[in-house]
Amino acid sequence: MELILQITNLSFKLCINLHIICLKLDRGRFIIDQNIKLRVSGIEKSFPGVKALTNIDFAVKKGTVHVLCGENGAGKSTLMKIIDGIYQPDRGQIFIDEKPVKISNPIQARNLGISMIFQEMNFVPEMSVEENIFLGRLPMGKFGVNWKQVREYTQKLLKDENLPYTPDMQLKSLTVSDIQMLEIIKAISYKSDIIIMDEPTSAITQREVEKLFEKIAELKAQGVCIVYISHKMDEIFKIADEITVIRDGAVVSSNPADKTDVNTVIAEMVGRELSGDFPKEDVSIGETLLEVENFNGEAFKDINFSLKRGEIIGFAGLMGAGRTEVMRALFGLDKGYGTVKRAGKPTLIKNVHDSIKSGLVMLSEDRRRYGIIPIRSVSENATLSSLGKIMYKGFWHAKKERELVSKLFGRMRVKTPSLETTIQALSGGNQQKVILSKWMMVEPEILILDEPTRGIDVGAKYEIYKLMSEMAKEGKGIIMVSSELSELIGMCDRIYVMGKGTIAGELTRTEFSQESIMRYATGA
Image (cartoon, rainbow, N blue to C red; front, side):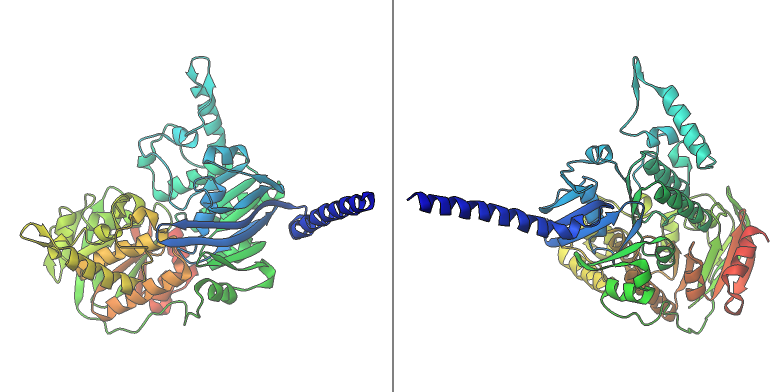
């Protein structure tokens, strides 16, 4: 009997030891590299009607930039929001310095050394620069908020980053590019070990991009690890140490940047080959649709240009050149003075209604502030400007709405769980496609597209480029405002370059080059 007990105890100890060894072996693939700062294992997340993430394993080393690629809706932002504590995973684990952590909210994430720059900028327009930077973490003194400390720190931060703002400026007075730069320095100001950058360059100029990359190099040298989400391939291969591709909520590949290339990453992202970067087609140019003569406004003067049927014209320029301001005035959002002719006849556009009635529509550069109603459904957002097509004698016809929206969404490849899903639940790229669907339903003759591919993946960009070409073939005129010179060169028939509120030059296709555009933009 004693012998049996000894054998039993020995067997039990042996089983325990084997279990411990198995655990170590199972974890061994993760703890071999002691440089790993952040790791997620087996992360899964579902929303009503859609599986967003499936068994995600992802690791970031100290002092590196780990780029996360994927089409809009692939699950990149969802994964980052789980790491930032905004969402809770259905299963899986997060590790920091190989210690398991539970991140219940963004405040806890900040305390763990995690900060995040969001694709959709989070700010309060009525608040000042200093109030937005310290939002949610105002330092308290004996008699309330220590505003002296807030002011001094904000001034130092702005000075260190060489930004031309004052602490008391309201954000509503700044441009999208200004606000994006402030969001970047706000995230950096947390002194975090892990910084998540979700499309940080989607709203800033090339000069500011270069400044950001210099800052990233500084942070890397300090041992900070950066998770960088971008659809801009030229950016990715400039700064990436490692690249992970996610498609349909699952990891497709994870490789050192020097072991892969642009074509491979794009093919892995979209799951198919793209037949050329810019599907621009030769279209017969027709009569003049729009003439703008001696057009003046608060931020621009003496603007003269024309647009013909079937033509795509581009507007290039540095931040503050006045491109968006001209387009807003043409669309009736802001005041503009001068002559605007439609089909050779002077047209008075006092407001947006006049503009839409004349067949001219505009896709805004800031979809969140001006393009969508976040709490309404994707279907309601898509039909917002075409209610006359679904309303009869005061009654709403749901069947007609579903038919119209479903047809357009199929053409635009909008990914949505249902037509009743709120638009704020969609990815940025799919929100942009819904807005474009809204304007397509109006059947305009002229479309102003202000940064139409901002924050959109390569597959979705290609679809929008194809749609632009199709609209041009149908005889529509398109004005494309973009900070990406490559897409202006790839898609436009002519390019107007603006500088300091005026048109500095006009280029035809035979004259296109990034150098010639920048010479005009900088006044060189």
